[in-house]
Image (cartoon, rainbow, N blue to C red; front, side):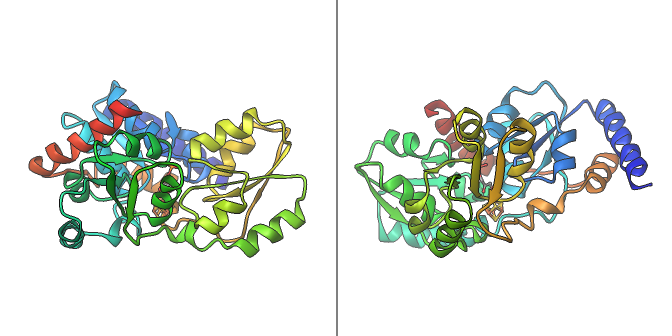
Length: 305
Ligand code: 13P
Ligand code: SF4
């Protein structure tokens, strides 16, 4: 019964996709059934790039608000729909322009590097953006010995351990990753001593120090495919396991701890995806002045890596 109703929903999504001349893109943390119906699944950098290359009138974004906003900034001539209007990112909301201005006053003239997990307004005030996949190259490309990194303190710290530049950290964090603790790493290693342990750079430095690698979500996917290991402990949002298991059926994957769930990423379902497409709701727009400035910071990033 549930299977046939899912099938009907999928058929209606496909039909509506044709009518809207749409492309459906999804982040690696989306629900398995949402990833499966998307035309493209990827990490933040891949999705930002993909959105500049699509041949479609409408981009249907299965993810959170800042991601759809990035797509809207790069595609002013296309309509961008977010598949759940209330899907935000608590980390992106940890800094607003008034707060950023206070930090800029404290560090006058220091260029701002903003993680793409930030609002369009913050991007517009930044010299350049970065993702977890290109953060080091981006920071090294900035023509200054000092940078102000917002909003993720953990990604900023991870980059600071690999660059000669002074990285000033804003104290934002992602609750899904920040809550992972060294004791959980030790316990997971005890339970699965043969496994390779990889985490996301949004984890705390003490956790990253105990891991075998810290990688963006798509870097993780490439890493596990190429690795000689047959078992892995994964320290990021659980949605990533879907593709990992699909693409590596001979390998075993364990989550580092329970509760690695981003509530906002999970708001999108096949039903919200269909409802969004049927009523063309949740259209994401960015005021032109902000779009132009934020676009410069994103384009600068895309030129680096
Ligand atoms: P990446 O997919 O770029 O690694 O980002 C993880 C994330 O937290 C997105 O919200
Ligand atoms: Fe934001 Fe973390 Fe969710 Fe990514 S996983 S959208 S950083 S809260």
